Length: 143
Image (tube, rainbow, N blue to C red; front, side, top):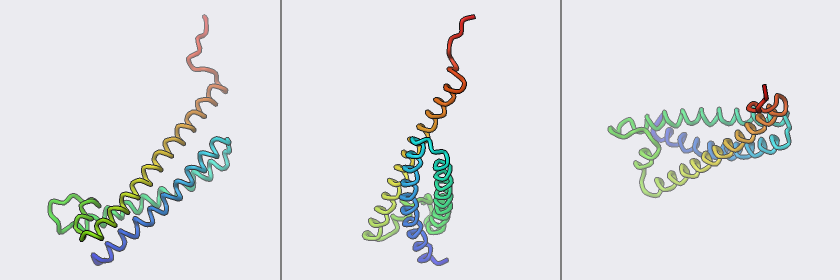
């Protein structure tokens, strides 16, 4: 693959990741709603969808790392990162790429926040069900 094709793939993957992170945001919001509604079937469906999206994102992340290593191969002393890679670009292209990368990082951070919120809700619900089914674990019982 030529350097030009590698750059094209890298930028295409960033755009694809942005689209998938938006889909992930939606799936996480829907998962939250399903958890609030105690809809087990919808929770399962959304978990599968979230898993698919995460797998796609992971696959592109690995490819992005590989492309960065390849594109930076001739630049001794540069750690393979997109920041280092974008630094090689002329000003207008560098700024556009940095903006796209920043937007992707913001989407990823929001999905992380949503995932943590959903996980906390599911954990709280699980603990509540455990107390209902099995009683308080630290309830004092007189001898």
